[in-house]
Image 1 (cartoon, rainbow, N blue to C red):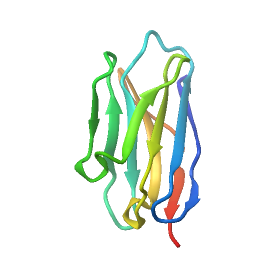
Image 2: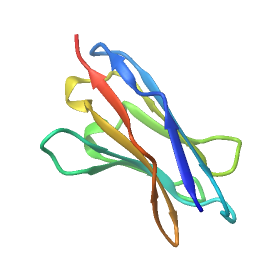
Image 3: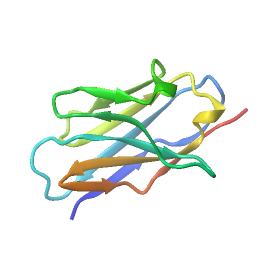
Image 4: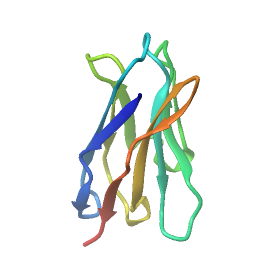
Length: 114
């Protein structure tokens, strides 16, 4: 049974920063692609960032230069450093792991508001 646990969401003012963390546990072999989606109220879920086994990263255009995805030292952990946050970044952020199929975390709320 694969489980993903996220942490680090919260309320932040525009221009502020947050760091999201995600740790996967269970019977997982090797290091696998991981990343983050987000879903804002009334909108479809969108891919924010992902990191592949070799370290290659992808970002949605709206977060390039502001967000950084990275791996932790523990296997199958991932972080999302979010800087210069904007109100339009407000969403529930979901961590995912690609291991045969997609596995999802429970989601963590990020609210950017003054």
